[in-house]
Image 1 (tube, rainbow, N blue to C red):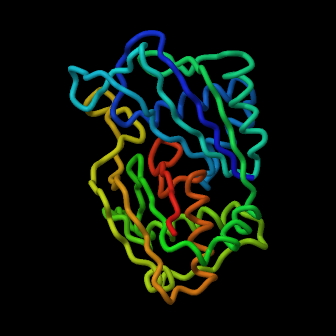
Image 2 (tube, rainbow, N blue to C red):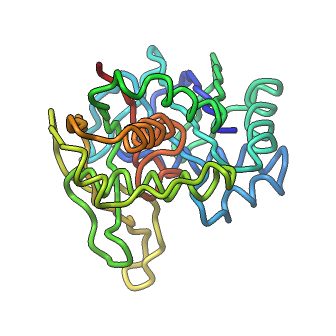
Length: 281
């Protein structure tokens, strides 16, 4: 059953973070889990399905003297969420909540720590999402995605990254994620041609840039260097054509609802592809 944990945190001191801080949050959360349940931490890290997503920090930052860095302020609070779609969601959820809430551990980043002040969680079953879409599908005319962090979608088996929120790229990514974790009876066979034929994009705001998803030690230069992924960020509305079949509408709505748990594209555990979705009538 997909779950989402929302954490509201506060730093004890001011410290710097890179603009793309998702990979630091990911490492910190894995360390929290490792201290509670090493098996759950290893499973989350080794899973080839990207069944855990982590959004970027949201809040008011100070300016940094270093380019591509920002500074957290002890006077402000910062929120982020963790989406869990893994079949072992109970073990992963417990390994995160127990240390951070019951044991009041801090989230340790490279230059400082975040103390958790509030936690909220929500769950929604796969069957619930399908039933909800079935009940509301005909009254929905569009779904709007707010890509809160860069969505990095690789074109099939190439090294080419999608740099536009194309309907086929976005919903094919979500379809693959859904089919990899949902019960077998709920797997969907939505075709790319159906996505292209019955949906239209309407970008509202849109930009492209790179996100740092990890670092690797460069032996030639003698210091760590960033690993970057290219992606797009902003808001895009996906409008149904008037003749869109009911099953296509329902499938798109299910995938859009699922997106807030799973994230869109690759590197979702490292802060990429976080979205907020609204449904329009």
